[in-house]
Length: 266
Image 1 (spheres, rainbow, N blue to C red):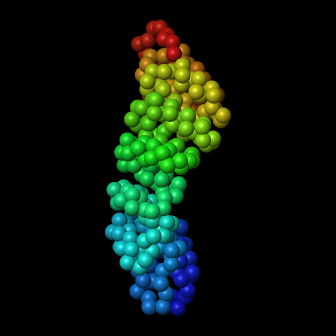
Image 2 (cartoon, one colour):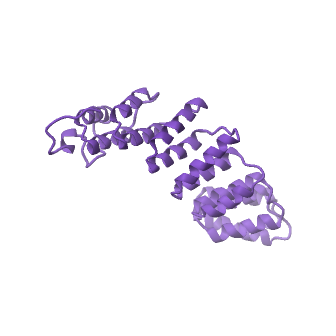
Image 3 (cartoon, rainbow, N blue to C red):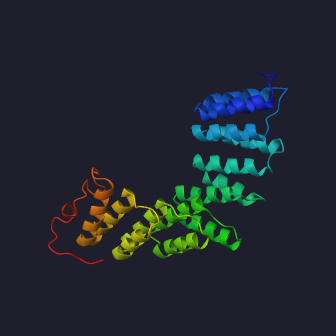
């Protein structure tokens, strides 16, 4: 295959990466860099990085990173972003952040990678700080940005921050997803604001799914709100009559309050 063009190499490496054959993709890349006739291009490097992400092969990622720096690809925005992405997927968020901080150009994709990378690394405060920096620089996020932020706020139990994120979504005219609403319902429910959670569900532009309603039902159990639990359970059964339940294996609200004799309000 040494007499093939760089396009052929890039294509074959990409195919193996997509077919979930990362080791074969890496093997081909090793053959390519030993070839005297062809030099990898940006597409080849992006493809082999995708293979490394599937294999979670940190050692190989570092080798490719060294190759990128040694052969003058270090200023390539797409490659730097791909490196950030694969480092995050391999759990090396600090290495990804080092690249991000040194990058002269940052795309929205790179901001999203780092925000969600910090969330996956349970560093929720850093994810929120990055978003604030985005706001300061006048960079508009998208639904991927907001999904990470809502998740961070949910884990922190930061209701006011979550509401602020939701306001940002609306202000920037980003189409919210059911996951956004699910996170906000969860935060409201944890704070005991069951009525507000129900009101938010009513305002959703799409039908709530069983995760949204299951989160509400769980909050009702925690805060002893049988009336709201009955409403949530009815909605759950309306959208999925055969649903086995999300809380203690039951959508029967009375089963969630075995010792309760009265109702409480939202």
